[in-house]
Length: 229
Image 1: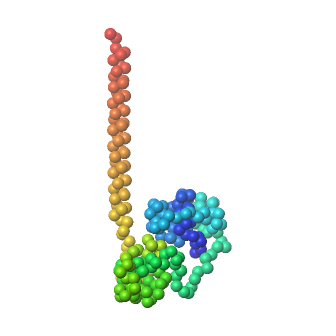
Image 2: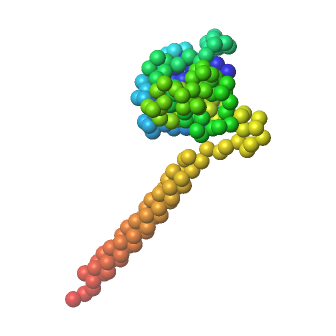
Image 3: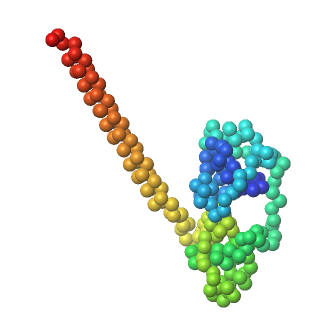
């Protein structure tokens, strides 16, 4: 499926300028929903400047409004724009992020031993010799390499990493790992919202009780004034 020319910047624009769900934005931009969540929460690794896909002729405003009206609707990109995908050669990585590759490789080696050297090389866009050097702690800069999540570094998307890990786990006969990093946060958020809702209900009940008492007192006072002296 065709994707926007600048997926992250497009997702940032859609988050700020539409009522689309995170799932719809993630699907349209080819991103993982957690990446869209990070963009919405302003916790992404870099501050993104939104890119208007309507002005870029990648989607119509009517299509966005259609999606906003139906959360289950899958957005359709305008025809005539298709990426030319590279089928050979290493994955391209912007110059500004190339120094982060060793950290991302070290993280994958430590956290996903089921991944093959070829899989890591394809995901990060690096050579076999570099991966083997880091794995064997023979890399020239090994003392300064700190394992970091390649998704957080912007070296790959969460969707790409999840797909690769699931594929490797299936090949090895292992159960695909389940990302539970945000489970605690979700549970805490649910409890916090529940507590806020209960507090709001209590406050409303107390306000209603006070209002009723004041009304009763007013009626009693009025009745006292009407009694003959």
